[in-house]
Length: 415
Image 1: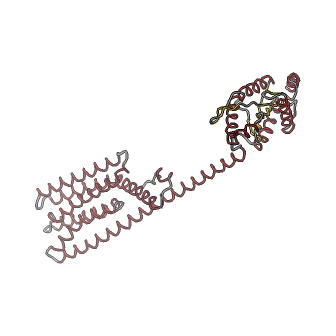
Image 2 (image 1 turned 135 degrees about the vertical axis):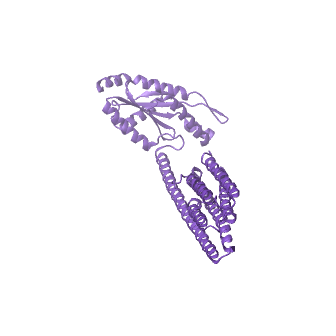
Image 3 (image 1 turned 90 degrees about the vertical axis):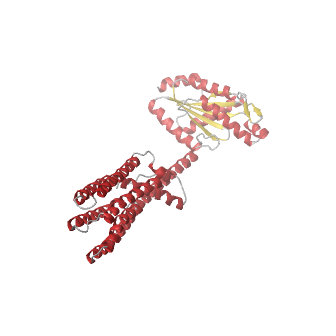
């Protein structure tokens, strides 16, 4: 039997235990039917071969016309069962009508068993020991061979065994002669034995499949738990390094990122710019409109800044309305000046927040590596100092900590 394939609906959704058991049972039923249908080609061939042997062996005896009609019927039943199997195997969604497929298979087993039961009831050659022995031998072989092929669907096994053997048992018990009665009792014991074997085989198969599906579910649940834990860890790590209001890097991540950026530009002999931005009179906005509006305003400010800064820059919120921007691989301070000018112009445009039309401006201080410092603390202090100089001159402006011509000369020396 092939290993079961886990059902995505079972694997990916949390359902109550009762519902889970029902879903597993449906998958087991589908697996059993698929397994049985795939191996029944051999059973169909064996049934037609046995019927042909019966026809050839019993034809010289009584009722040749009835025997021929019986042979035609068993061929028709077997072909119908064969077509049923092929329809199932080529069905796109066999699990949709699982009960129907199971019912049709049980019906096919019942009809096949009735054909053999009819043979034993009306065509058994009591007057010819060789023919009788041949018939009993074939019936015993057919029923024994049916057990492993039908036990997956227990009612199919019951239907075939009972309709095949009970008419033969009744015929032998009611026949004249103690030897026939003995044969009938022996066959009754044989029938009960086959039923017990069918039950035992069915139990083993279903328990094995059930255990396989439970193991698959357990592994999938463990995998889902691991995935959920990893996602939680990622969220916790993100929360530890980012500002919850603006989703910008917080002070901790800024310091780590800034140190790494300084190391990179040192190795590549490139320049680096730190822009320190502060919103002019942001406290007055909070006092006038409330902190909720102030928070919304800060989010809108960050959106405009993000649209202006280069793609690989690092933007952080150190706290309050203090925002820093790290620009790596700066070749010319003029490009930094142009960026600061564009940010100031963008933020000077009015913000529509709720029912308010709010005007703000920003002051930006700029420190440059390496002329304004070679470590995080020095560059941050100088950018902060330059920002306050811009604010004291009225705001809505930017200011370099070092004169831009001196910066250009230091770049030439540094490179």
